[in-house]
Image (cartoon, rainbow, N blue to C red; front, side):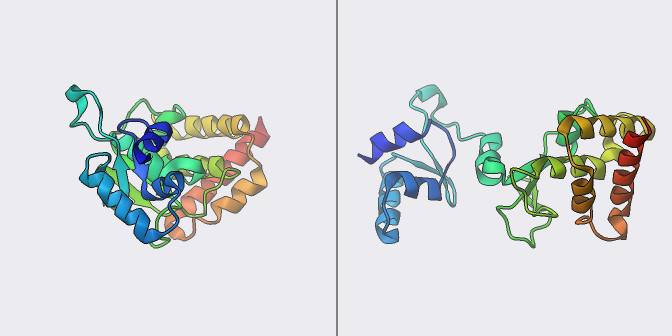
Length: 209
C-alpha cells in the first residue's frame, strides 16, 4: 500500500521531506508514522539521505548508488513555494551581470532559524542564511534585486554600466520604487549603507532618462 502511494507521488531519486511523507501516507499518529518510516527504510522501500530527507532508490542497477542531486535537495529544503532564493554570484549570472558560473550555493531561506548566518552544509558547497526580511511570492523579486545590488562589485560591467542595467531590470521586473526603498531599509547598518545609496542611484538614473 505504502509503496504504491510513494511511487504515485514521488520520482526515483527525488528528495522527499519527512513532512511530505507524513502528508501523503496520511498517518496522523506520530509513533505510527515513525514506525512505518523505519520499516520502509529497513526493507529498502526508502533510503535515508540525511535526517528528515529520504528518497526512492533508482530501479536501474546502473544508477542504484546515485543519491538525490544537491540542486534538488536545496530546492526542496530551502527554496520551494517562494521560501527562499539562491543569491551570490549565481544571481548576477541569472540576470546577465556576469558570465561567471559559481559552483557554490548561497541560499537565503525562511526555512532556517532567524539567527542563522552563513551556515555551511554539504562540504561547504552550500551556505545558508536567514534573509533580511521574510520572503514571499509578492516580494521575492525585491529580494533578488537587492541581493544583486549587494554584490554588484562582482559584475562584469563598470559601475555606471551596472547602474544602467539595474535601472533597466527595475523596469523589467515592474518593481514599485517606494517598496524597493522600504525593503532596502532592512539592510541596516553602516556596512550596508552602500546598498541603500545604490538603490537611490538606480531610481535617480531611471528618472533621468
